[in-house]
Length: 602
Image 1 (cartoon, rainbow, N blue to C red):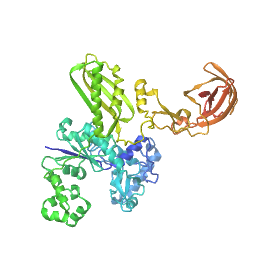
Image 2: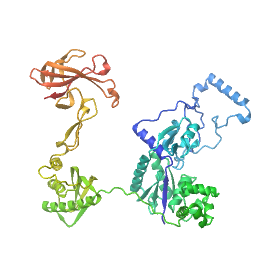
Image 3: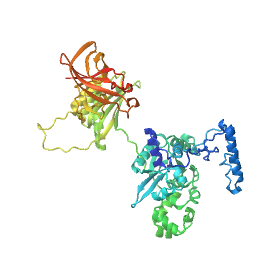
Image 4: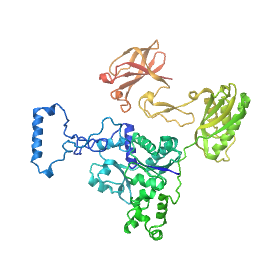
């Protein structure tokens, strides 16, 4: 029997924004206009904490036992006693509880009662909503728990929501970001939970869990496992399991529990008391059913089908049949990207270099055809040779740009044959495209032959394969004022950025500045007249500078007050150096006034 699980994430958009802010280390600002200085806490069962908050009172505090505090508390008690009975605060507001306390040795509450990680943030900070434009007005696209508790709901006008809650934290909706997160969650579900998972609109997943629930010790434990994962990820979720997609979808969104499990062939009983909106109807059908006085699915089932089809459309009956199991509804699962690979298995082990080269040629041809069918070009190739002793010999080569040229790939792989140790023989060989990119056909023109530009990609690939990745590169400029951060390396075929500075830079930059000794210089802005570097003393005859460079405080707090004064100096032999002094000579926090050499000109 088919079983379908529907994971519903009602506040996905808001939870995603909070997760991104927490990942970046930035939290929303507190709302100073809120009348509550300290947010109320919640117990495990969702009820408000019994201790009064906001006034700084703490049970058992020493100051609360003092005479002044006791007099204030007695005066407060007299004021409460003077009020009429119907105006006195409740026992819960006074910090008194009459209900039975929970067992302190009981295990942690189940995910069905646990609050999501983001709920604590939502209580500490203003309620958050996302908005989207619809017909020249802004409406709410998603709300968090605090906003939903205040009566806000998706589809409400933003002006109406602000009238109800002036301290709303309003963000722009990002449906593409939400769909990307759901797609990643669906891929995770395919790898960890079930082979079949489908993105359900913009707020959930649909999973076919037929035959996999026993791996989690039953459907109930599997549902708890999924909700625990969502809880750790900062997503508040609800889940329902039923025989049909429509029933699971309805129970997850309109059920009373966070975990709803419908027994086999009991979909109609479970859906009878739910509103007709649970059948995934459009707005016109919902309005038409409301004008006819149809509010529940049970009322819809008892009515004749032909008049309903004429009045509300045939799609309503199709949705009803899909929910009750009369009509099948297939899932369209997400398919994770599978790396293109080809394999050869041998009847007898091989070990000669010539035989390995012939097999590599066959594998390269098969992989090129596979890449052509998918419209891809390979960037990183991995050849795995499995020996008879179950050991693996792996060879990895890369290309400067995406390619499926058989001769080029074969040339790179054969250069690595000498690194393969066949041992007692190789049982199988597999060629995998670890990294690939889209590669469209290139239109050939009449301008070829001697006038055609040289293609350096094959030359670069051969040099890198023979000498290594660090053997060939191109320097490029980075967006930084600190010299050691302003220079980087890119691949030879990538476009390098130009330097945009008014001050000249040395032709050779040291990887790290080296300290120089025995420096003779005047303060605060004079260049050195003599220094010793690598055991050689240099006497300076001319200099230019200083060029002041300050630290990047947004990268490291320690660089907030850091200062470097750079000088171009030339010794008596015509050698020119780029030296700097830490500090400005006036403030101790700017540096220790030590001298360093950072580069050499010419």
